Length: 465
Ligand SMILES: Nc1ncnc2c1ncn2[C@@H]1O[C@H](COP(=O)(O)OP(=O)(O)OP(=O)(O)O)[C@@H](O)[C@H]1O
Ligand SMILES: [Mg+2]
Image 1 (cartoon, protein in one colour):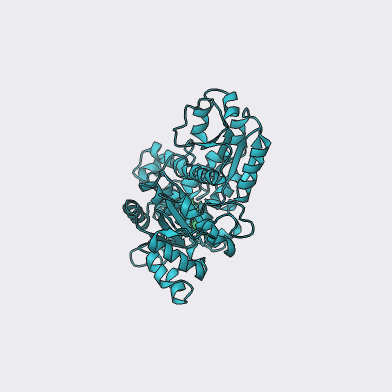
Image 2 (image 1 turned 90 degrees about the vertical axis):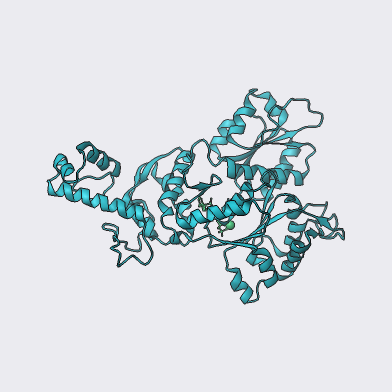
């Protein structure tokens, strides 16, 4: 999850609404607000709402089956006023979270985090996206040998409490893997708490991690729980750990060793039961070598080291991921893009993807937005994907002696090979499908079906529609 997303607040009490909006905006969420619940479903749909926070009384004003409908779409955080006697039937649902007024902001933050986690892992566009067969924890896709091995490893280590260090280039899915470990573990009903060690200003990170007591520094108006405390009995995800400053590395090492910490300004230690997963897109071994990362901390963190391979090291996953994102964005944006022409797929399979899966996801989203319907062809691709001439028209078919250095996309090569043979047969018979089918040892209807499915037309080689 890159951007925290949009939260819909349904609340008619101005003070509560301002407080919740300001607090969540500060945390990076976009906020949409309404003072009544009647337009709730339209807003969820139009504004791509992630989480709904609503006052219980306003919810009770609308249809009695509201809770049942809403909880199928989005996680719902219900605010309960003092002395409220409205009965809330679905309170025990795992995507309905209850919070009493007056609000405690730490509790709000913790529940929003849990709701977000629930949404990412359990409702990834559940209504629209059929889950492909090669998935882990319903959201990580991959069928390459490297990814299948990684899925097996993740399933095994989820069962333990060991500290995990996930390394890999930017956009390879490190955060997704961390979330999957948490989801598959016995801690899944508690918080998964991410903290980006590179994004938080240096003077705040210690208080973010360990919390602070009232008056410990200017601006510390109240006691505040840190991420360690929020992650108690759950999982703490230390993202971009390679950017952690030296003095904090020492403190983190101490917490990992003793499992206790002191909030900023306090002398009292707090004990926590937290599973640590750290991630870095810089090679920590190199940072240790250049003395930018403590060696002892590196060994503490890498009890179980995982490396997520770059996308160019597992090109077989590209068509699968394209399909997955195409389904997702077609559903989300209510578009009907049919697919990618085989020529486009071949170009994308040969591309090196410096931004890995994130780049691919962004590209598919952009293409679906711009395209609406029909097939995506090379003309639809941004310039940079076309910059490197690829042997697209006739992809190299490995002969055993000269397997391409960067590997191949087997499905695409086979697909192109089949296309070429079909077109050659049609050429031989001057476009007569019945005779071409005989040459190919196929039924005429099978050939016609294939031509349709592949968008192949004799005389317009490899052109989609
Ligand atoms: N195997 C995968 N299947 C489906 N989606 C994936 C996969 N890998 C990554 N993604 C998607 O790609 C995007 C980037 O993934 P993620 O944020 O986990 O990467 P990262 O390695 O943490 O990147 P960074 O180093 O830049 O923080 C996310 O939107 C994620 O959902
Ligand atoms: Mg990340």
